[in-house]
Image 1 (cartoon, rainbow, N blue to C red):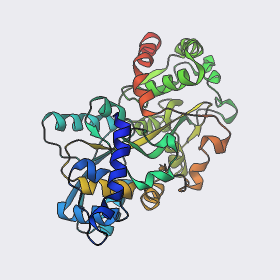
Image 2: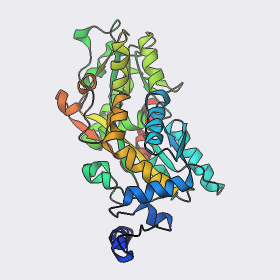
Image 3: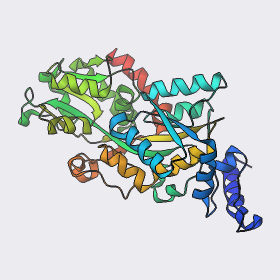
Length: 364
C-alpha cells in the first residue's frame, strides 16, 4: 500500500472509531499518527482534552512577533487556557537548520513549524510527518500537499520596489524587459543567500517562460550589473531603497513598500507579469512531544479565526474566505491585471540547483 493509500485508509478507520467504541465514550487516539489524522465529530474535544493534559506547545515560525506570532499565541491560549504556547521566531533557513539539529540530536523541542521556504527541505530530510485537518477542505488544492505533509498558511507576492524620489513615475519599469534599459545599470539590487531571493526570481522566469527564453533574458539582465545584496532580509533591502542606497530592488515582498509608503516613506511597489507567488507552509516534525496540541493549533491557524489574525498583521491569508486588506488588494496580481505564477515549495527546491547555476553563470 503506497503512502497516500495508507493515509486514506487511516483517515477512514479513525472516522468510524467513535461508532465502534460507543458514542457516549470519547476515543483517545494513542499514536501520533492517529492523533494527527483523527477525523471524528468530537475532534476538537479530543484534541483540546489531550492538549490540556500535555499542558504546553512549541511553535517555530518566520512570522513577525508583535504583528502575528504574539497575537496568535494570545488568541489560542484564550480559547484553550489549559495550554501554554511558546514560540521561537527565525528566518525560514534558520528554522530548518534548528529543526534538523533537534532531529539529529533526538531531542525534538518544536511541535509545529511555519515558514516560507522550510517545507521541501525538511520533507527531503524525512523529518516531518503527515497530518489532516478539516479546515483544509475549504482551501484550494494548490494550497495543500497531496501527501498531507504541509498546508499553506499565508501567501506572498513578489515584485520590484523603487524609490519614488529617484525614479520618476513615467520612468518606472513596468515589465522585465524595461529593466534592461541602460539607465538603470548599477542601480538595481536583489537578495542573495535566500531561496525567496535570486533563486525564486530565476525559477519564476524559467517555469513561466521556458529554459531558453529565461536564460536569454538573464544573459541580457547581467549587463545591468545587478547588485548582490546579502546583508539582511527582504525588509532590510526595502529600507536600503528607502534610504536611497539603491534606486530599485527586485523580488521583494510586495506589501513591504506599501506599508512603508503609508507611513510616508518614498517607496512604492511595481508588479511585473509573471508575478511570482509562494506560500508559507505549516508542517509537523516527527517525534514531537505534544501531538494533541500540534493538531489543535493546526486547526486554529488554518481556521477563519486564525487567518483573520494574519490579516490584521498585514499578511495575505491563505484561506480563500479571508480577503486581504483594502490597502494590500492593489498588489494581488489577478485583481491588479497581472499574471501570477505560483511557485510551489517542491518546485522552488527541485529547480533551485539549475537556478543557482544560472545565477553563478551570469551574476556572480
